[in-house]
Amino acid sequence: MILSDSRILEEIEKKTIVIKPYKREKLGSNSYDVHLGKYLAVYKDKILDAKKHNEISHFEIPEEGYVLEPGQLYLGVTLEYTETHAHVPFLEGKSSTGRLGIDIHATAGKGDVGFCGNWTLEISCKIPVRVYAGMPVGQLIYFPVEGTVIEKYNSKASAKYSGQPNVPVESMMWKNKF
Image (tube, rainbow, N blue to C red):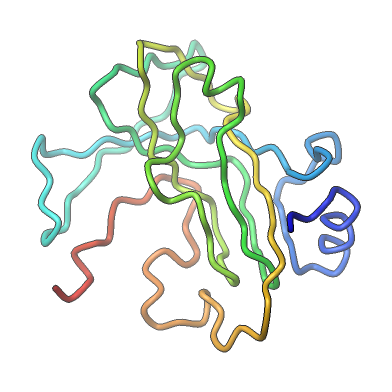
């Protein structure tokens, strides 16, 4: 079951869902629109290693926009900072974004109860496309949780992405033991 607009508003009022900045007109019938923040990043190395800390270079999207190129992975970030304390948030691309050939996440569309931060986006495109800071890129939908959550994401010592800032964050796979 997905939360409706009225249920999302109730949860915002109870502060179990936090969205900053929040604009009422961005609330859909069962989702909230999120926007591309002003920073993108790319990995410094051409070959990534899952066991090593792969560093990224951040850059700001200029006012005239930035052209994404196929074959390049870009890390972006949502303009919105969110907190979800009682629901499972899912980030999906908007149909208008998809129709431009832009994917906003590879596999990381689900958050955990207790996620607090800006969402890092794994952006790729099918054809060259110019993007702009502040453009709508996705929508958050919220699912209720069955049962009691024993430990929320933001209280786990192993939470690698808790408190993500308003800049893209690189993969933390290297922190896993394997």
